[in-house]
Image 1: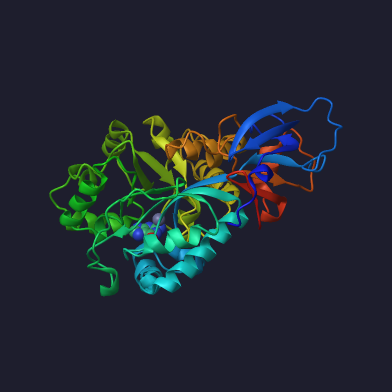
Image 2 (image 1 turned 45 degrees about the horizontal axis):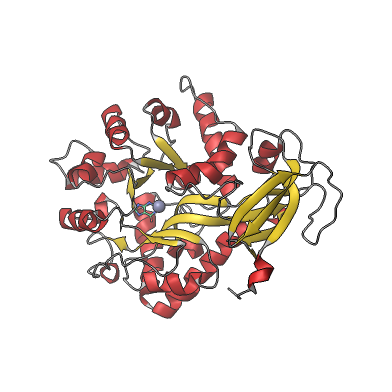
Length: 408
Ligand code: GUN
Ligand code: ZN
């Protein structure tokens, strides 16, 4: 990013503050300095024009947090017609193999980060590729964008084309960028042998975040049963390798029995619900009620490119729609999350699940990753609902990333 003089970065923003999505957004102000929110107040007088005054109805809200995505897949959105395993073989593995060229990887990674910035997602957890240099590509690309990321080299040693296999595992050297954390990303049990899962566990012993996929499709689960006949079920494979921890993000979890839910609850893992991806690949309808009954920590992910939507309000809306579909199809006692709860999940909820309590909220001390929204409707009591169902990235008229105004 272009550096600004120090005295240009401290500023006051005025607008309607969406602090709690259950409450109306009231006029107020936010003081930002050194990349953080340093003070906030309500704007009862509401008349003093300042250089940063936004429109009367403009809403200031925290930027979105995405708990699961794949940076090398942004150019592969929308190849419909295949279930998970065929889609990986036909569409995704060739796309990821193209990152073998470091310059291509850097350029495509930059394009994905710009797309996230445009959609208002400034914090995320995600996957790179199996290439060790995919980490360097990310660092180079994000130096120009500045998002807050938890990303890892994809660990995999079978069931994929040769160019994606046999790569050395990069150690988790602490990055220079304070907004970057390196995670441990064993792809999923189908493409990881016991040796690979063991190497992942060794790498994660330092306390890093672990990201993987679990029980996304029925065919995948059948394959895992055949590959690991000694284990009771899918989650038990990861548990045997000590990969189920409070820092583990498990994407999907669509096909789990009660004992598996209990295991995930006992290990305090985070389950990342990916509703748009589950629908796109026809993987299944996530049982959010089972997760809630077991007290599972839940997050929400776009899972681009299985999920076709980059914008997190679209993913939040899909979570509500999947719950409504389950209820309409006769599932008993379905809890349909409210739009406000869904909005909270794509901001502070996901941040908490990623272990980032200073992200995804308007609060003193929080990182100043902010959006200014201008909507065609007044910000009334149903604001979260109107935003989710009518979402358009064009609502975002300003972006502040770590306290600096950012381009679209
Ligand atoms: N399971 C293993 N790899 C992937 C992936 O890239 N996307 C999705 N949706 N599921 C996976
Ligand atoms: Zn995924």
